[in-house]
Length: 237
Image (cartoon, helix red, strand yellow):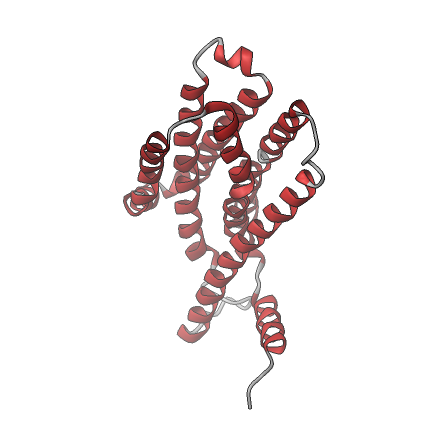
């Protein structure tokens, strides 16, 4: 007998909820931060179209270079394993790169004249686009390693978990990681709908302010990830 879809979803959600542990929360916060990273995607597209007028070939080349950090995620993950003692600093480094990237875009939109007095707007944009994936890859690699650390080896009585129990916990951890990313993406969609509701007839200056507001709101991304590593430090002690 087939179970209705909504009942299947309810059963799985309840099962995940029962298996959730406080130690899972730090990497889940880093994953959620990655899910929220799409917050600036729409604004970035409009900014390029309305203000920079970059060619399709230039954007394609820039997309290639921006994708290189993700292609190097495996060696970066190995480097994270070697530097595991300093994982907090690695997450902080990723958060700093993200903050600089988002700050550049917010300043470029809200204070264009001051920024272009130092460098052309195109140079600032390229710098922002290249810094962001480096920060995300570093944090994502640390989060992947944290998922292994987050699964406990012993129960509350100090007894080792058997292999099936540990396998279930690892599976749950990975599933919750995907849920955290999707949850962040849902939040992004809702925020964009809220911010841009009724923006069709607004003057250009007001739309620019909305663009800047989105990038300032996106500064919560590195904050959430760094907060997750801070929580991991507290839990370990």
